[in-house]
Amino acid sequence: MWFAWAGAVVLAIMLLLTYADVIGREILKRPIVANIEMTELLMGLVVYLGVSLTTRVRGHVRVDILLNVLPQRVRAIADAITLFLCALFVSAMAWRLYERAVVKFTKGDETDLWKIPTWPIAAIMKFQSDDVRIFTWSVLNLGSTLAIVIVRNLCIAQGGN
Image (cartoon, rainbow, N blue to C red; front, side, top):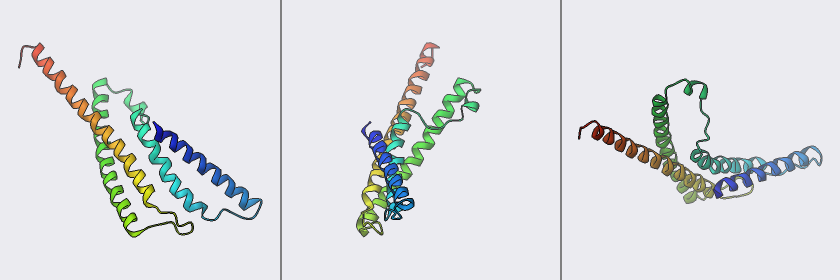
């Protein structure tokens, strides 16, 4: 997943930028101008570049202490409900990020000090949300297809149609 590596690179840049700003501010008495606005832009990239891989490997935080005591069938249902809610949320988020990217592009929105256009960041966030959205909906679709096949085979095995 190239975007996870890109997220790691962006995080390293953020780390170096913050380190240089602290050294510049505390030792040289010359902080990096617009460090905060650059960090804000990079933070959005770090989060959205990492969320797709995290979703694919099912690495999101879970309350295992509660889920592990539940029966396997209840855990599967809880997973399906969680995935469905995630798919809905990410779909809404992708739609809103698309709108934000268009508005930022149309208005020529840019950062105050460095005059960096902000629409590319919103567009990257939107495309990463799309990746998560497509993945979650495809998993839900695959899961519902498998459920239908399993129920149908159980009915056939029991002599039903």
